[in-house]
Every structure is written in structure tokens, then in C-alpha cells.
Length: 110
Image (spheres, rainbow, N blue to C red):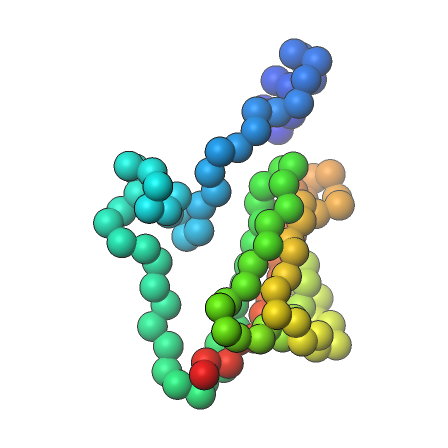
């Protein structure tokens, strides 16, 4: 809320972001990240449930797992009829007080 209030006081938009984090990591292009990147150890042929959360106020994010299909099984705490896709676009939530959107995905390893 502080970011919104500051932007309104200055008659402008909030500052644009130059980096996003995944599990708290900015990635290899920033000196403040850990050595290496996030790796999820998985077993062949198993299905995993991932919860993807966008807690960014003004940006949309795309998410995919290379060479895998995704099955969306829930969004914002509600289960839905499964939807198969190769990627998702996750946006800020439409509700003013809840700025994060959550999507639950099934990914089967190949």
C-alpha cells in the first residue's frame, strides 16, 4: 500500500521493476543472487503440483516448463475443471485488497 500511496502523492505510477524473483532469487544477471539457480529435483514419470503466485502489483508474468505441458487445476483457492496448456499468464488479482493471483498446476515429468 505504501507504494500506491507514494505514487498517488507524486501524481505518477509506481516505479517500474527491473527484476523479478523466483523463490527469492533474482537470477544470474544480478550480483545479489546466490551462486547457481533454483533446481527442483524430480523423479521420472511423476506428477507434481506447483503453486504459482504473482504478487506483483502492475505486471503480468508468463510461466512455462520447457518441453512439458501444464494442467491448470485451480486458481485463487478454487478448484476448476482441468485445462491443459503449454504456458500460463499470471496477472495481479482483480480484487483491490488481494494483489496476488494464485494458479495451481500439475506437471508430469518426462
